[in-house]
Length: 495
Image (cartoon, rainbow, N blue to C red; front, side):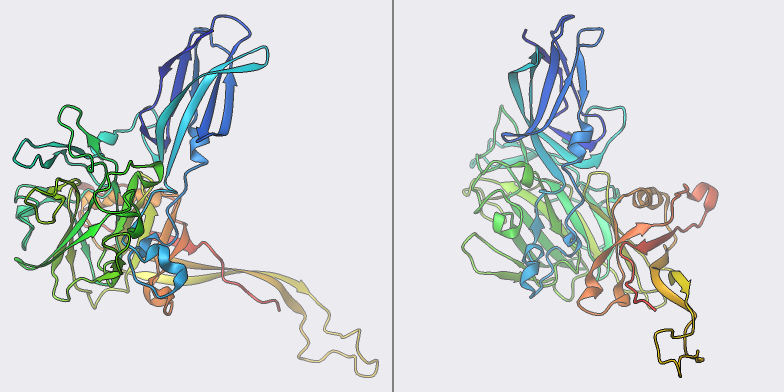
C-alpha cells in the first residue's frame, strides 16, 4: 500500500530540537511504517512503527542526528594564525568548513508487511546543524541566516543582494555605522546600515561563521557562478582614512569552498554549508592565503596603525560589471563585522578569553578581564605503610626517622580558576547566558603558559552551574563571575 509523506523539517534545521517526519496511508493492518536515515547509500538508522489510532505515524529523528554533529575543531580559535608546524596546516588558512558542525542526510521511507521491507521514496537535501532551537518548533528560521541574491537589470546584469543575512552568532551588538567613530567602506554600505561590532586588543581572537549557500531567486536568477560566498574583503581604517583593503577568495585551498578557483559556481555540499573565518586581530596576524588553486602563498597582516576594520562577505558577479574587485559584487551578503582595536588597560588583570559552542553550533567569544584567581585542588589516596624494612638486613632492619608511614599511592589534582567580567549592559548579560549553559567551553589562559601554548584555548569544565539575570533596572552596576577547571587534570607521581 502506498503511503504519503505529510510532514518534514525544512532543508536546514537544528539537530537539538524536534525533527519530525509524518506519514499516512496505512490502514489497520499488520503493516508498519519504515524510515531509514541515510548518508549517501549508507543506512545509519532504521526506524519502524505501526500505525497510530489515526492510521498515521510520526517519527522524531533528533536523537539520530545528534550523534553525527559535534563541536568545532579544537584549533578553530587559532584559525588563520600562521604556524611553522606542518601539523598546523589546517588552521593556517583563513577559513574552515562545517564538516563537524553540520550533517547532511537523506530519508528513505516505505512499509514493512510480513517482515518484508518495501522502499517507496527517498527524500533528499536535509541538513542538521549542531545547534538548538525552541523545543516546540519543527522548523528553524534559516532564512534569517541565508543570503538571497538576484539579478539587477543594468548594463552588465550584476548580482544584487535582496536579503542580507545575519552571522551565526548569539552576539547582537548591532550598531548603525554612521553613529560610530571613524570611516567605513562607502562602496559597500551607507551610514544608515548596521554592523556587528566587537572590541578586541591586538592579541585577542575572534571567529565568525557564515551561511555559505545562497538562495537564488527563480524569476531573476543571478549569474551561474553566484552559488556561494565568493570571498571576503578586509577593509582597514586609521580613524576616518581607509589605509588598506584586501580580498580573500573563498576557495577550497583557503579552507572552505566549494569553489576550487574563483567563479567556479560549484554546488555547496553539506561540508561547505557554513564557512568560518578567523576575523580577530590575532587571527589576521601573518595569515596565509591563496589567490587560486595554483597560486603561491600570500601573507596578510593588519597594518600597525589600524584603529578599526570591517570584514564583509560577497558573491560573484559578471566580470563586465564595474566593481571594486573584478567578478565580485560590492553588496555584502551578511551583516558586516566591524572590529575596533582597543588598548590593553594596564590596571586590569591579564585577560582570559572564553570561547564556547553557541546556540547555532559554532563559536562565540567573551573576554573576562577583571579579578581572577587560580587554585589547585588535590585529592590524595594515602595508605599507611610500616616504617620497618622487613626485606632488609636483619641487623639493620629497624625503622629510621626517614622511613615513611603514610604514603601517597595516587593523587587527583584539579587546576581551577575564578574569572570576573567588567561592568556590562543588559544585552551583554543576556549574551553571557549562552556561555553558562554551553556544553563545550574553552579558555585561553594567556600568561599562564609559555610559548607556543600561550595562544591555545584549553578545554575546560564550567563549575558555575547557575546564571542569574542581572540588569540595570534592579542591579545598576553589575558583573559576572565564572568558575571553571581544566578538562584534563595535572599529572602526578606516586609517593
